[in-house]
Length: 138
Length: 141
Image (cartoon, rainbow over the protein chains, first blue to last red):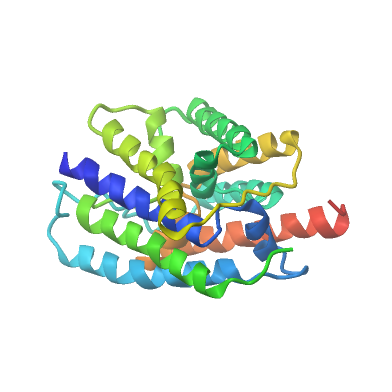
């Protein structure tokens, strides 16, 4: 029960952060990605703020034997940079650049009832299921 | 075009970072949205409830922000429905293939000094910049 509360609170804080920073708005995200246009550096501030707070959090987690509400940490341990990682990131970057939605903001934007968010999320879920169909073992 | 909003950007970013930090310390997990959502495609009885709780929080967050800070989130999309579908398919497939998105690689991965996440973040940023350049400057969309 407590671990569900932990997940709910973490998700909530991220949702509030996405709304406060306006990163839920694809137009604002694209204004950052559009380096050669009328550049809006806000997304860089969001990343700086997020990483500045996340670094001590992960440092603290690394000092502990186990997390507070679960039996063990489930952080990835891989260090190799392979074609799947880079290829997947490139495919994601292409989709992100086309509209300005990435997974977190798109899901958070569902809460506003905005139709484009529903269309995007439905397609995103289809893309995830397609991945599962192509690589069933992973 | 949108206006530079450094303070709300920094504050919002810190809230996102706080969510990621708490999820790491409390639940021992990476707050990567594509991973949390994509994991539902291979349901396991022990994982599904926390995934749903996390995603419910993500959708609840903007409502809380509206109530607490009187923010009315603006969602402006310039692309057509066909473009949204194409983008969604690419984002869904690509984030699963590459094991993460802006939150998992970009925030959590960079914060924990992961080489893989750095490589992924640089890649998706560069490809996104190139995509927007082609769409806006070359195709004039």
